[in-house]
Length: 196
Image 1 (cartoon, rainbow, N blue to C red):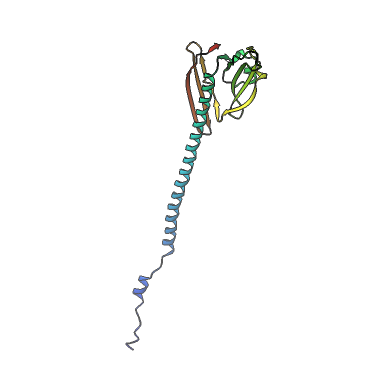
Image 2 (cartoon, rainbow, N blue to C red; image 1 turned 45 degrees about the vertical axis):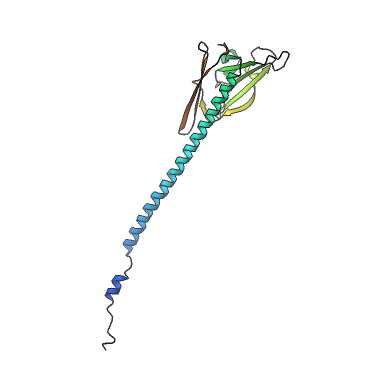
């Protein structure tokens, strides 16, 4: 009978012991907290990247708009107060405040004089409109045509100002969407004829 002694199973049960239900639940809770934190960080990082990309697009769009306006101003001969153009302020209440005029100096041309201005439409886009004429008589607002979008996401250009005494034009585009806003400014020396 000594050969068939019963084995003592206590030491084996201690070695191969399983997890209790409480240990299992605590383990799941810790893993859930770690995974939740990880996915929160990933989500936050993704939103931060989207926000930075939108700010970059907004900035590039605004810089393009400012540079476009600067180049057009430099290519013109005269700057006219928007109040001198009949019905401009009532037809386009959010206009830039001035009209640019160029003289191509081609005599007898139907398009010798070109009048250009900008306004902000309901969709926060800066729109360029023009009128060509054989003479230098100021057109009425209804004669301007075209619909060239210069830049988007512009909230206002209310701070744009012409100082004819110093021959300076201060361009300002207040841009934004949602919580992101940006104010781009530029100062131009413009040796033009002023009608203000």
